[in-house]
Amino acid sequence: MGEIKDGDTVRIHYTGTLMDETVFDSSEGRDPLEFVVGSGQIIPGLDVALPGMAAGEKKVVKIACADAYGPINPAMRQGVPRDAIPAEIPLEVGLQLQMQTPEGHPMPVTVVEVGEEEVMLDANHPLAGKDLTFDFEVVSFDPA
Figure 1 (cartoon, one colour):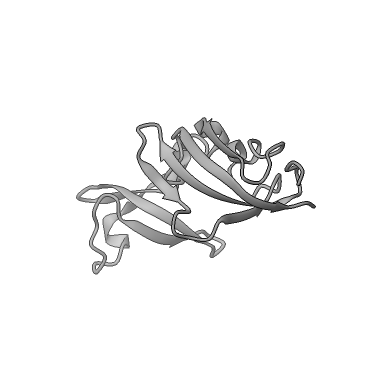
Figure 2 (spheres, rainbow, N blue to C red; figure 1 turned 45 degrees about the vertical axis):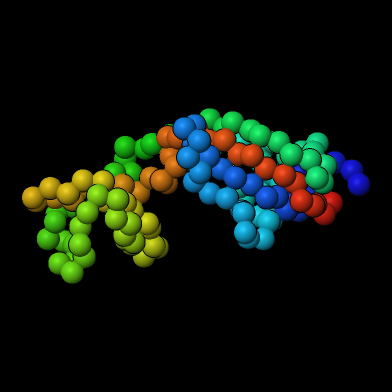
């Protein structure tokens, strides 16, 4: 059937784990993940692992944070006055909120610190700064 190349539409089943083997995502029990190889739809470290593979082939790849969700960017953390957050929102570390950029676009943030006067919000991807492992199988692919 041939080998996968950039531009092909692939379908994979996968399990993503952190270096301590904690599973952070999996396609188990769901349809395979479908995307176009080389299009930037998935993290770069996984994208580059696919060319040359065939349907039915399995692979385990370790991906450094730079080729996954990037390093933690300190500029993506911002303190906001506690009274700027509606009182009905129960503030606790780990709570996910949705803010708006000045242009009105939604931006997910996580509460990382709750102080008396200020709440520290982090807009980094939850997997930023983490090295990842993907164990995956090519279910099928359609040549470009």
